[in-house]
Structure formats: structure tokens, C-alpha cells
Length: 462
Image (cartoon, rainbow, N blue to C red; front, side, top):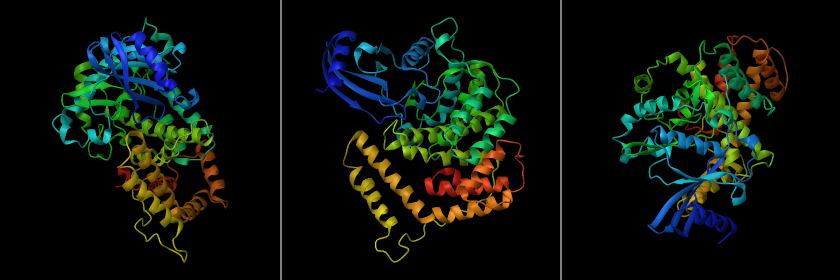
């Protein structure tokens, strides 16, 4: 038994009634900033299963964009349970003396949490048509939770829509990486702020992938780490962001439902009408926020703050969110490179792209199926990373040449690609009109080309 399990056993013996023995502790697929463990114990009532949620030990607070601490999250779980919102029961909040870091031990619930399975599993086929309405009802109840007069009043940040946009953009600006589509989206959001904004408790990450679903419906609303006090429509818009539809772009609510189902159920439960214009604004914000957050996670890997195989690949997901912003703000035609082009170009045998392809296929087809749990997940992440590098080898230089030529025409000056990107970003941060001729076409083509390298199967390209 290692020190982690020894410390965990000490806590369980003290805090769980009837505990007699730790039977097993397995880390499940970790999130970007939090880990979840499945804990099996022996107790007076027989075998029992619990869950441990804790912060990634190497993660600095600065990397988890807007996150509250896990002790506050545990308070929110308890508040939600008392209000009849489906949640696991919190048994114990970890303290510094426990030696396990920040987190809490809670009830283990059975259900599906993987978004891809939720939108496709035959076992959930009957419940899927009801999920959008259930989400509307759950969000209405969350937004009605009374945080005033509790310890949460001082623990939850209060953020206006404008401050949220500026804070998100400032995180991106501080990375010093010029991404014109992020600056364009920031400008659009600033120009289209909601005329009125309610102020309620906001979950902050209510989406497919943070919901536990069973045949009976929503089993639990998970991951409250981004909770705050602000505009509640943010939650509704985030649920409808394309990143969380898992390929089912025809069903805009989480890949399982229609917007009218969501809004009707929310209205019936809360008595509040949410317009499609409000929802659209927060969908744009959600994709803008995710485009920034993924880059920030990748930067925390580059600086050595959070060593992780997953983090740099997550950074390449920024182009997915940027393309969603394109489709929400300036839909139109674009041309993609011929991704089916023979990878064996040139005289060298084998070519670098062929080597990458072979290793990626080995990881995906030979390694991932025979290793278990988190290691299987990491093998697939590694294969995906090599696939991105392969496509960059094949198409990156050609796409960069095309982007540079478009920028020369748009800006009317010469320069390297980096210089021209910086110039466009500088003008977008100034007074360049968003309807400047050629600007939308350039951004749409640039983002589509990058996404064809990063994730050619992403639905926004279809």
C-alpha cells in the first residue's frame, strides 16, 4: 500500500461509519483540472463504493480558469441536494491534515458520464428525447438556489457579462499568442452585450460530459468548479455549444435535444422567458471561452506547470471552438486541403509522416485495446497527437503560405506570417471595423484550414 492509500485509509476509518478495510482505489479518466477516484471498501454492511474528487496535485490555481476551491464545490453539492437537484451525497471534505490535497469523498452513483456514449448508446435511446427538457428544469432549479446568507456568499465570485468577457480575453492576451479569431469574437461580444442581465447562481460548466445519465434520466449534475454568481443564460448557452454535442450537430442541446425543448422546460419551471438572441450571445461566448481555455491549458504544459500528455492535445482543440465562432458569426464557404493526399511524397523511404502514421496506428489499434483504464485513454491521446503532427507535416506549410498571402492583401503590407498575424490582432484590438471587406473570408478560411489539421472530423467543418 502506497502513502496515498495509507492516508486515504486513515481518513475513511475516521469518517465513514462501519469502515473496516480499503479494498481498492482506482483513478478514473482525469479531467483537465480535477481527478476522480473510485473507492471500494469493506464495511459493517458489506462491500461499499465511494468516490473521491480532488484537484490535480501538480495544478496551480492560475491554470484552472475561474475555478472555485473544492470545499466550496462540496457546499454547492449539499445545497443542491437539499433543493432536490440530483447530486451525490457528500460524506467528507478533506482537510490539510489528511495529506490528500484538496477534495471531498462522496456517494458513488451509477450512470453514464461520457458524452459520446450519452448521444449514441442504445441503452439510453428512450431517455435521450427527454434530456433537453430535464436539463431545462434542472437549470431553472439551480438558478433559483439561494446562496445569500450562507458561507457561499463570500466564496462565490460575482461576475458581470462584460467583466467575464474582459477577463477571458485578458487570459488569452497574456499568452502572447496572436489568434485573430479570438480577438474578433471578443470585439463582437463587447459590441453585443445583453441589454439586461439577471444575477443568480450559475453552475458554469453545465454540459453533456458533466451530467451523469441513466435510463431514468439525469442521475447527477457534476463538476461545479466554475460556479459563480452571474447571468444564468450562460449555463443554457454553454449546454448548446457545439463542442459538447459530440458529433451530433443536428441536435443543438448537448447532442440529444432541441433548443425549444430546453427553453420551454426552463420557462415552465422558472416562469422566465429566454430569447434565442440571448442564447446565441452565450453560445458565442462559450466557444470564445473554450478557445481561450484550451490554449491556456496547453501553455501550462509548455511552461512545465502541469506535465501531461493530454494538455498539449487539448490546446489543439482551440481551432474547434474558433470554427464554432465562425459558424455562429460569419457562416460561409471555405476550401480545405486534400486530406486524402498520399502521405508518401518525396524520395525518402519512409517519409516522416509515414513513420508518425505507423506509430499512431499501433497506439490506437494495438495498445489502447489491451491496456486498462487511464492508460488506454492516454494511448488514444498519444495516437491523436501523432495524427496532428502528421497532418502538420503534410499540409502546414501550404496553408501558412496561403494565409500569409491573404493577410498581405487584407492589410496592404508585406511581412512574415507572424508579423502579419500580430498586425491583424493589433488592428482588431483597435478600431478595425468587423465588417471590413475580406476580413470574414480570411478568418473563416484560416480557422477552417487549421481545424483540418487539428481535428478534420470535427462537425463544424461539415
